Image (tube, rainbow, N blue to C red; front, side):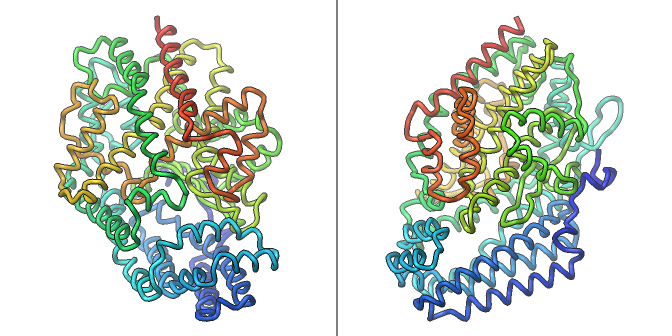
Length: 592
């Protein structure tokens, strides 16, 4: 179903935030006024009363910005809308203005010193800011002089503008291709593409799958040089920032906010490469089942159980998710009810709507979810995943004072993937249908592989692409293509007939452009959530709720250690890898 044909309750309605754009603009001006008050403190933050005033104003401003930002997500519903583009541009201008006017803060806070600030926080009952300032002073060695920080702020908008070109090329200027399927010419939407990849005839439609893939990624391949130039510019900006602020590497700079050691990032890549066998075993199983003479990467999504064609309406999907999460107790269900309210989730795809899914919220604003529902089990899984984020946000917002209610991204994917584990358990244990069990098992394997091995592969590509610039190597369209193909083959794609073919579709991974060094978090957080899930099954039901309530109250890896997860321990990775391997063995036995 297209979004324009859906019931209103399945679409975002932000009237609880602002009745109209005029009200949004009023809050925009309110945020500016609050920031003017912060700017007026320039040169006097070393006075205790002014420092306390700054903390109060900062909280007020963030609350307004959360509402403004939530409403501006309308751009993701229609990238071509002038009104939405205007909202987005105004908000970007606002953030740029704030960065310039507030660039003095870094140096003035640094000059006050950690000892004095912590004394004031204790004295004025502002303990909730301790973690923020503890992190701030760890990063203070990378702060530039006042003039340099102001200059960097002034340049940031133009330096970041290149990233916006990605959205325009990938979404706003995208034209859907057409393909002949099921006796008629149809637009190749994301849902139709997946249908062809999953449900087509293994042998007869092998060429059709290759055709569908070529057409689906045509926008990216046809503009390969543009996407490569945009990515090179993003990497160069990262490299410049690293040098200007004297980080040891681009990787260190990107991991610093989450206080993740580079060794953990590299250890994750190593763990993926050294334990790739379950992924390869799964691919070989698919090849063997259908007796492929030539096995292509476009064959890997084929559904084994052709008897399973179950579909889910949105309401059915919501019911499944609710039931699967009942084991977490009433406290979780109460938050779930809020997260699933009408108009907080935009369910259906549309021509100029952003791909994928996300959850966004916090600071007293109910979280929203963007989806592209296609009636398949994958959409149910995505809903469970994104609901995990929303409930995490609600728990953190309720349990922690500002700013500790804002948890870092490195913790976000733990809550969401934990829900995926519970969803599989619920579905698998509540069906006696052999074909459905077979289908669920295959989907489970594929989801774990996609989140673990594939995201590590993406993380390795991203790391290696940035290393090219750090090592003063050139970056071209062909070099990026070759690098992506190399990383694919290191992570199991050498099993496919087309493993050496030119692959220019890598820009489809929007995180490379929009959120550098994000993708590794999917993989590492899956490792963490599987550990929590194992503990939960062993009657340690308090760990997950404790985790959700901690929000951003301490260093992210310390939060995980508190619930038994240590990424420097090699044994942390073993349970997940063994689970994938065991599931593949189980699927093979079912097929035999």
